[in-house]
Image (cartoon, rainbow, N blue to C red; front, side, top):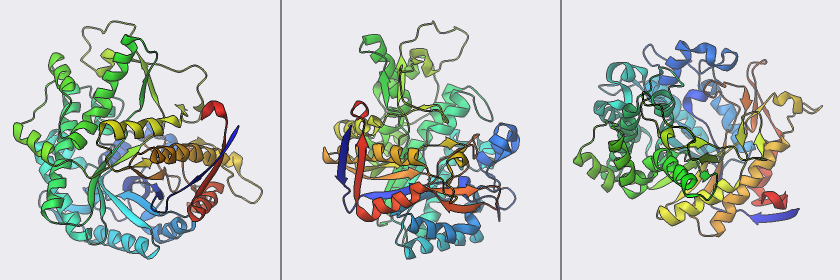
Length: 475
């Protein structure tokens, strides 16, 4: 066992994150303002754990002042959330702003600034207006890209004098991967061409928003929040390494490369041609992407991804999927969060940091999400009524240790943000697995209670020192 004490730099972010659709609820929402998660929930409520979904969520829309006070009490320096595109407008074509919803964000931002908590705002966290999916095919449409840029312009005009850290998307690969690549979520369509078209249009939209922000002369930065899956091959054998390399190409580099380097990897383009994956792009669009790379990245890191070479031939009647080149691999003896079914491997933070330093210009970045969801947390409640989530403290400590170690070794890492500030609704799992520093009591009018981890996070923020004891085997 090794005891470690590390100083946390004064400018290092210790924050937490959430999203609009997972916290605000539907109160005040107008007819026609459904987002993709709202429509999915309405169409498929039975797949959401215990039927909970975004309808009420944590009721942040009404309780944001209470929650901002808790953010301050828990020692947060920064808080990241999204603006819900589907609620910001009453007309997506003309850009007519829903003044009631926009005023709510004015008030939220002002409340955070009074509490000395820096707001970081994302323009889309899965919140594609459902009418744009139904009418135009969502991110398959170039017109939707134009509408998104108009939305960004309206948001910047309203809030850019108050907020200087902006992000176009959170996890831009996720919706189309679950819907069009894996066909696991509503509306369930396996179509790899649509998947790639959505990827491209989100890359293009990011570049166009970056260009807009700079042309208008706003002060601050525009980035994007990605969820790269740190991928390890089963073995050092060539066939396993190739499987990991191609997995990385399709799930990580498809966004990392254009956002930071300004171009798609040639190998990705070649494989899409080889497998007749059809998507539409123009030289002008590639030029826009090349000339308008992001200022910074947020990186969401939860677990490693391990793959091996495929052991079976691909069925000739099955449309192309990147799994043509790989199969999942489960490492024997791995540490597990059994509630979530995810491996715990804090080394992913350091490995990703070194990769960004080595391959992606050492661009400024931060851990934008990292957290541990546990089922039935009430079993850990003390006699005083506090959830004693020592497992979460240990998880944060080990991942923060790797973040600080990477920074010491030259990574341009700006901070660590926990998912999530409060327990909140997750896709399908709803409130099944709890992630928050703050407990949400669904049986008692969504009452808030600080967990042991919230008090610990406050001490961490105040003292700016991380102290932990590591089992040498897991360092």
